[in-house]
Image (tube, rainbow, N blue to C red; front, top):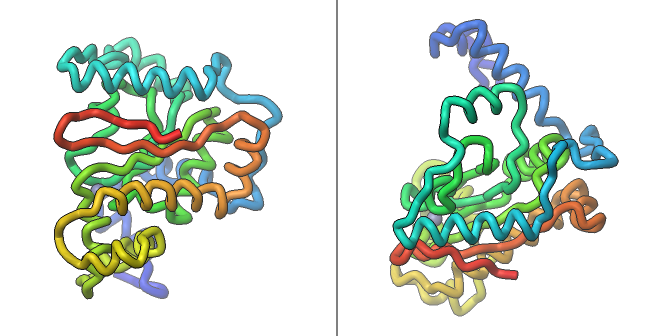
Length: 244
Ligand SMILES: [Zn+2]
């Protein structure tokens, strides 16, 4: 297997993972979509033929979450017909930047279905450049009008940032991207008891990073075509609290 600067060669990658031509064409199509910020052009109008407002998007999430925690779920948009419709085009009405934590799957906790949510998940809901690129894609190309940065109770990534001890492998990348969100007294806490205010601080910090590091998202917000907000998921009750 050939490696150039640590990257596995494309041919070897195909052989190693046994991917078909079809799969590779999918990867190529996907990777060509994610471009550098300078090449992303913001369409003059929303590409979604039936757009909804950011407020309506938030309302749908709130109503869906209520169904979830009241054990009154509808499992919408999961039929064969929905599948066939979506194979032609997708226009997710909201994007979620959430934690990779197994207890916080957005489609379940908001009781949504196929094609409803554009979900980006990474430990600690960290707004890295890859995350920002994904969110720029859904807002400019798919017409998504609401981004929710979703933190949660008992977040292990925030706990690791509070603990502030050496981590194996690349876990430190996550921790280093959360620590600036924490106040000095939270860092001094230095125990496994997760300070809830630290989780709220991290939600706010990552939300600000989206705007600070993306002129594309900033422009959409300025033109009132996009709303970015934080939310907090309580892993005990299943409730999501939106932070306006
Ligand atoms: Zn987490």
